[in-house]
Image 1 (tube, rainbow, N blue to C red):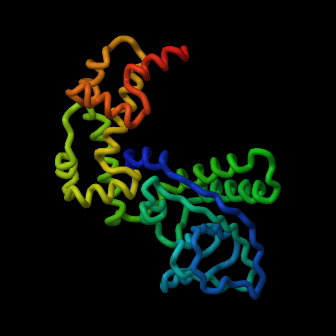
Image 2: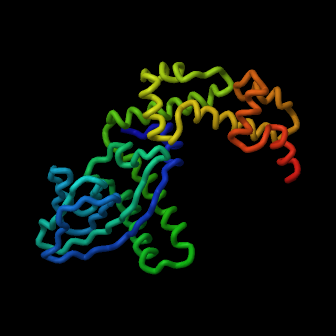
Length: 276
């Protein structure tokens, strides 16, 4: 399944907490006993064959494959080839603003088989992360985070088949695109619900999972972002800007703006002018 362009905005919102990256050269007796961890792991398998048990299901992995070990679920792994096993283990947390995990949202299977160019890129990123983790040069935290974003962006086309969770995400970002296009118009929660054939309550829950906000709160933020841009120019009055961002009551718009920005639209305009 080809990636949908609407997911690009979702990838931009991904929040990543990097833990560590370690290269392991595993001998004949190596294995990872059953465990349940709070963080997520990905294993880049360079040499040897492994057998994973994840959530009670058995998976076999070979060189040039990637295994995902999810948090909160029991998993274990053992070596099944006579040769030594080399793998890079990366610990991380990757969530969207509402708490939905990257791996869950995109339906990734436990074992992924990238093509050779992608595998080469992933192993390069893994080596860089291992080097940064070991040496900790100045600025390493920012570089590690950038590499993790690069990793997840590269991995996105390998997501799994569409799942119920995945369809929910498609609905959310279909609505975001709709709101960006129609924020000047009158929009209600019921109207948004009909757009994606979900009840208002279900839509609100799903929307929060991905964005951390309700649909109406997200719409308000979109409108206020546009209002802040418009207020930096003297071309329009506050009353005109009120209508341009979808409100018909300047007094209500001013109260809303103050509640979210901390100053009235007129005060914001004066403040921005003073900075020029």
